[in-house]
Image (cartoon, rainbow, N blue to C red):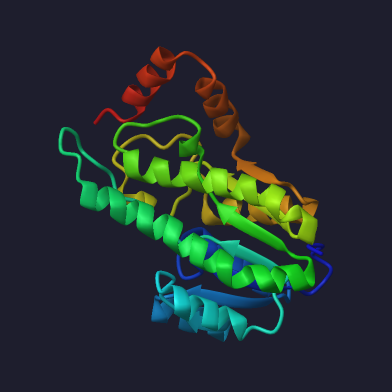
Length: 245
C-alpha cells in the first residue's frame, strides 16, 4: 500500500509548517495526491501551487473535521502531525497552559483519527501519528508537551492492536529535535538537531518499510530509551543538565 511506486491519496494534518509541510512537498514531488490540511493560508496557497489539494481547517472543530474528511473520496495514508508546544516554568504551574497543550495535541489528533478511520478501513491504509522522543524521559519545563506526547504514544500503540482486525496499519513517529518554527523557542541544547528534510526522509522511509515505530535520529532516541529504563536519579540529573539555562 505504501510503496512509493504507487500513487497514494495522502492526508497530512499540520501541513503548513515544519515536518508536515516538508512531507507534503516531498510526497507531491513523487506524484502522490496530497490533501494538505492547515490554517496558514499563505502556506496552503504555496502547497496548492505545487499540486496539493489545500484544506483550510481548524482541527479543533470536530464536526468540521469529520465533514471535510468525509468529502475525500479515498485516503490511503493519513499523517497526523498538527500540534503545539509551550513550556512551564516552575514554581508557577499554569494549568491553563497545560490544558491548552494537552487539548490541542490530543484534540487535533483524535478528531483527525475519527475522520480518517472509515476511509482507511475501506482502503486498508495506514495511519501515522507524530509523537516525540520527549515521551521517553521526563524533562523539566516539558510537563505539558511531554505529557501530551506520552498520551499520543499510548494511543497510537493501542490503535496498532485495535485496528489490526480491519487491516489498517498504524505507525508511531518518534522524532528527536527537528529544526522547525516550534523548536525556535527552545533556549536549551538540542543535540543531533535534524532538518525538516532529514525528518521527512526518515518518516517516508519508515512508512515505505511498514515500520510500526519510526524513530530518528537513533543516536538520540536509543540513549533516551535507555535512560528511561535506569533509576530515576540518573535521568533526573540528565534532564536538569539539558534544561539548565
